[in-house]
Image (tube, rainbow, N blue to C red; front, side, top):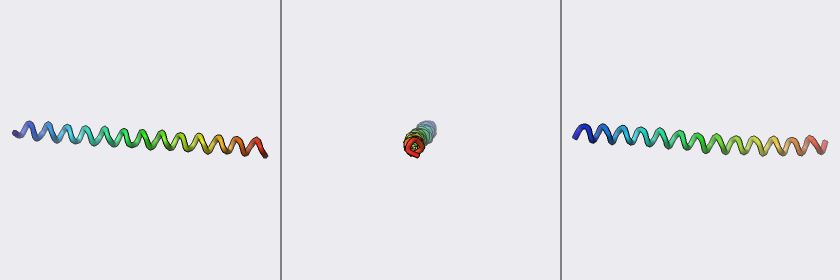
Length: 49
């Protein structure tokens, strides 16, 4: 019984860690997109000036 509980706990910990990593990656990519958009807008403004 104890081994099943340990395996289950390990699995849950691994899944939550994986979920966190995915979450961070999505946030990071969204942030990069936002930054590149802002940079593009700045370039457009620089051309206008």
